[in-house]
Image 1 (tube, rainbow, N blue to C red):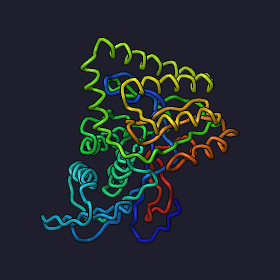
Image 2 (image 1 turned 180 degrees about the horizontal axis):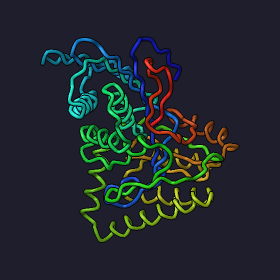
Image 3 (image 1 turned 180 degrees about the vertical axis):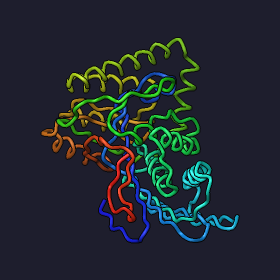
Length: 340
């Protein structure tokens, strides 16, 4: 995204998209998952104003909320901005002072794609407002603030989206234990995302899977434990640089996701086109039921795979892993780049 910045006091923060490599859905029941941050970013632009009012807008959705003198006015589908307003309230409470500002969010990350668009927006917003209020927010604090916003969107989020978007890189995450970062070299590998074009609701899919698990616990409890064991094997393979083994395990993970009912004919088509075209592995990423699939491939094989997927998918992204998470991209007063 090419941005031109104007204004004397602009603050611009960004946060990356995420891809669940393995472990989605099972992570909700405290099994581990592995997530990658990828180089698609959400950005939040904040401009302080003299009057104490807060104006929130989204370039992607064309909507706006204005809060001034205790009155709220809206334009368009302003409900999508509710998580951002929540972050504004939280950061103002931490700072213990009031500031007026205009805040605009814009994102390269397609919504409802399984790539953590809402979490990236939340992380970028918390980062930008922390800078505005001159609060030295830690990574953990930014992630926790974003998690509160995610609860508005997803009801009971796992926490993995806000975590990976805040920290970047590659993480192993377990709900009860938090996360560890994997120090792995993924430079030979590209991440290919193919969007099915089918809408889906994370909350609805999580409830569907939970209902199935509650109905057949003796059948699905072992499957969940198998998924957790698979994640540990993937972590070892990544540390060993054995990407062929990573791909094979991704394919197994896709089978487990199909078994709990989150696949469909379109997602299966995308997965098998990617595999036939030379991907090391391919699977659903995110909630399923729509959204996207993820494939891993060596850089030399990417073009053929991407071209094959473009014939059958809504859009295709070829991405590198984002080693940086939340960052300040622009602060006019300092005119430099800061990284958290």
